[in-house]
Amino acid sequence: MTEAAAAQDLLDRRADLELIRTVVLVAGERALTERDAGLKVWSKSGGSPVTNADLAVDQLLREALLSARPDYGWLSEETADSADRLEARRIFVVDPIDGTVAYMKNKPWWCIPIAVVEDGRPVAAVIHAPALNETFEAVLGGGARLNGRPITASDTETLDDASVLADARLMEGPHWPEPWPVMRLEKRNALAYRMALVAAGAFDAAIALSPKWDWDVCAGALIAEEAGALVSDHHGRPWRFNRADPRQASLVCSAPALHSLILKRCASIPLGL
Image (cartoon, rainbow, N blue to C red; front, side, top):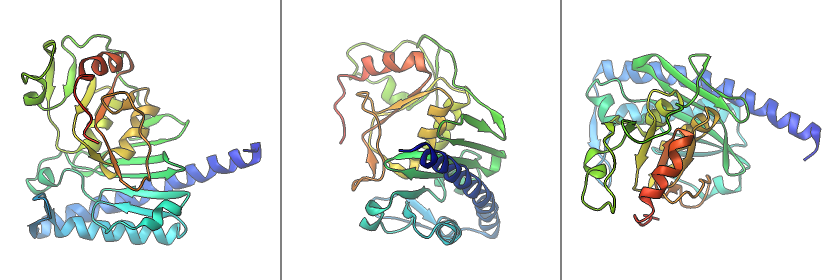
């Protein structure tokens, strides 16, 4: 790539970040308004809940983003997938409401994650948590921020007493060859928000050993990595996006010194994909 082309790509990514930041704030207000007006809730195939607000926010995002970038592809939890996105150099990856159960129950731990993926990797991303007034963002090579202020992952070096976002039943189960040390385990509904909290240093790691959809983790991957965290599946394989199967095998997002320690303990657990 020529120097001029690289400079243009950087300008494009910054423009994309400004676009998705502007649109996600509007989408957050729409989600709050829809909930205040009363939600209609039903179950999707597989049993997970969906609301009229999920669909309304999805439509708002799709119309606003694709009208501004008509040549970009689209991948969203609430839009039927199309193979057309595989031919696009850049695509939007969106979850209209990540953490729908928390959203329905008026809990604060839900968010709207949006990423722009270019040639298989996220290059601009925003995670907006409207109920908490928190907006995380990053552009490739430009660091990560929360409400405009730079953030960095924690410098924790040991798993003992680490603060970890993971299911206690998973971490304390009998299937581990070596028990985990005592850690402070907590849960948050939205995967994207968990990764944002690791990026901000509020938690030392987030672990989930089952396959995860791209729309849940794509924005978080860029924000976490730009904050200095490490992200992979639990066998250490790096993620790549905009593939025919829009899933990652599992999630390990952690402070840099903890990543290899977590992978070592997870090595015996088979990959789900």
